[in-house]
Image 1 (cartoon, rainbow, N blue to C red):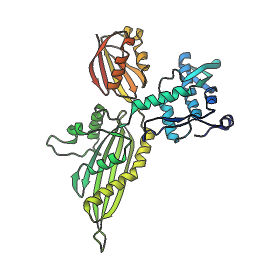
Image 2 (image 1 turned 90 degrees about the vertical axis):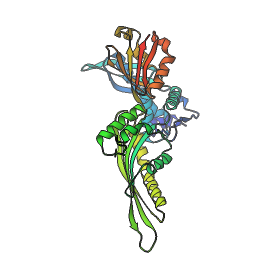
Image 3 (image 1 turned 120 degrees about the vertical axis):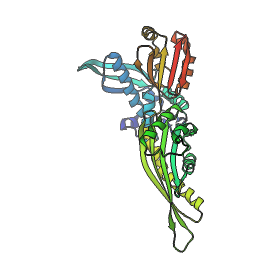
Image 4 (image 1 turned 180 degrees about the horizontal axis):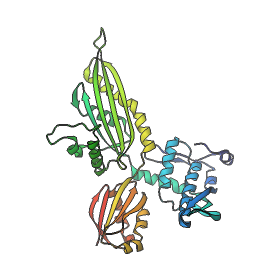
Length: 381
């Protein structure tokens, strides 16, 4: 990301913030002399709209923050910069934007208010927030199921082992809990890849297991025959796959890859052919995940035993929204029990722990009825 000409004239050195989301979840910053000037400058935004003054201010601050990030961040790819912007601007903006003010009067655009605004972006708070969020996020939790056929016989480990060794940036989950959808009642193995019904079942189970990314694939290794006048045989591996965002159940990548190896030893030839195919597809998978996968989990929070009036008076929604790592809170049901849908950078177990840490703020005591990665059910005592 390049600075504009005006920024180049005003700065001798800049802040380098390089975040490698999938190689490392640590935020490394390098602050050099002269960067203080960036934080002291106003960021201007135009034609910001809102339903009312409060909504306008929120939208304006988000635009200021997003624009200001472009002036504070240098280095890394455009994709990573987009991830950084999304992580911060989708989080609480309190404190990130200072000295905010509207410029001029509101303009009426239909049912919306429109105006220009300015504000300053706090570099230090952004750096601290990013460190905290990526610390909470950790490595993306990855689950995979690959149907493997080696020289016409069913197998289940070579491809998965090759992927685990190559994709060190992911936290791979054990798939033992998927036994109920991986086998029929007779105990025979079933093919998952391409079976929409089974893929849907696997997605639901993956969500319960706390997985964030699911790879469903198929590997076929064949012997293409001997090379004339030699003992070498040609082993060819083809891997087909789909990658799901478990949270949204959306396919974020679908492709195939292949690898061919000449070898006298069948076992070695098969393994090397699969490894070659995995090596080829590795950059593609990382790229698609970095572009299309958004860190976060959807969690349903059920609150039993509290009236809607108490819920509003105690600002329960606002308290949840103020917890670090919570990106969004929306109401699903305002009757009994009250149900909120929460998007957070961690699962339900972590969110419940954070709620317990702040239980005095809620104004009532509560206990858990059920806690899962995607569900929190609490009861007012």
